[in-house]
Image (cartoon, rainbow, N blue to C red; front, top):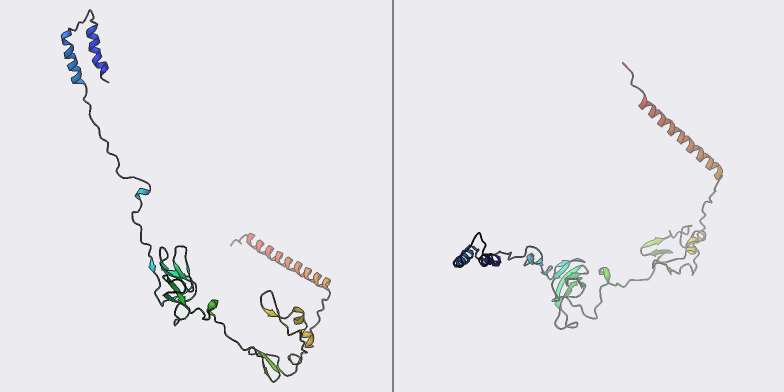
Length: 268
């Protein structure tokens, strides 16, 4: 970098010109002057950022709490969908009438009362959370105990014997017929073994066939008034004339309204 400045006096001393001569004794002085005028090298420092300005490095170092733990205590009443326990991992397992969520939370599947218990018949060390359907029940239920059906219903034995009172037939407390032998009486209707057979329909309900239902009035000797169609062409002509008259009335009303709007006010 400094070589052109150093060589210039040297070349001038080696090739003396006739107009200007530089004695050789001053060559060293020229070197000293050149070296003194040259700027001394200095070190420059630039302070860079010590923290990343953008990106994932500046996110939250510790997020908010996830509110884990028990949400319902033992014996507390819950409904389907209520979260009973939030956790990370499987510290508690779902028992009777409970299920796992996708984040390992335990939630209720039936309405009842919360129970925290162990079941050695399933696993010797696991802890379970269940829902007892009655407040007095304890979990786990015995293996051979009667299980509750869905909708908290129990199977109950019913009496299938039909009640007959003096010729009147009652079905579940409802009387069929008046028992007097009239046209609407059940005793007056001739009974057929085939008519009492019930067949399961598409809606999973037992009912009689359509032809049997249709012949009930015939067997009870109930006459239906015959339908007389009448003259349909005359009825159509009357209807058409009535429609035309109504349209003409509507057109006249609209014309009278428009004439009132366009009429000029009278001068006083």
